[in-house]
Image 1: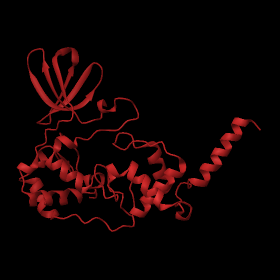
Image 2: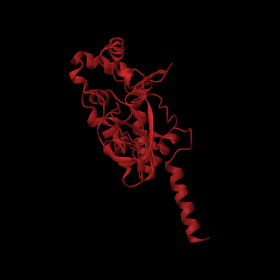
Image 3: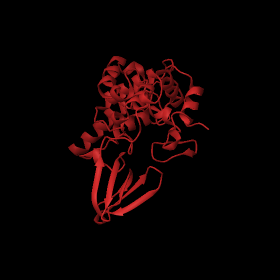
Image 4: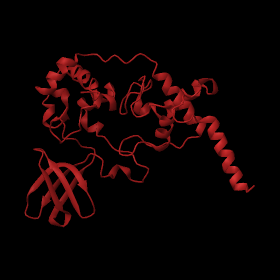
Length: 269
């Protein structure tokens, strides 16, 4: 037998012993939960929370994960990431990935995090004092300048949402990429200011950009498109958000209520 082919067969057999088939559940008897917890703290907790409660990444302490309903699907996400999101790919040994899967499934058996506050009052503040619909889209209504919040409670944890309300510049979302210099990806949120050769200044959120042109949405929601050769200046404000710091707009109790409302938004009708 060809030596290279034999090595490949051997590797496949080893992976087959460690990774479950699609739809199957990983056996906890073959993998130490302690190892999964340790790896989770190293690779995952900074985004998903120490107990999977969610932060910059979604909560993993859920009985059913929308993107990973099976262990096989969760293995693929760990290995490949989720393109167009902040979830990167991880180069881990098969047994390490399998340990993380086991630990994440254990997190799904924990009691659901109880978020303080009154969601009904938070919804009222969202629509009135907070004026959030001016920029944000929710359930088919609102502005397009900010993120669509229809399912924000699935994508972000309560701690992250509170921080985003109080320090929006520190929480500007950035897509993770396997490519170098990923912070400059077109998909990343970026506030730009352009000055035309005629002296007109327009500011807004970048919608698209290539080598020769750029499109942006201004604060009224209008789309503008420019050839870069038509501009006398193009300023890119990386890490800056037009969203106000709501600690100066809402009381502490009101911030708690708005966070409770936002975490309740799971995308259901």
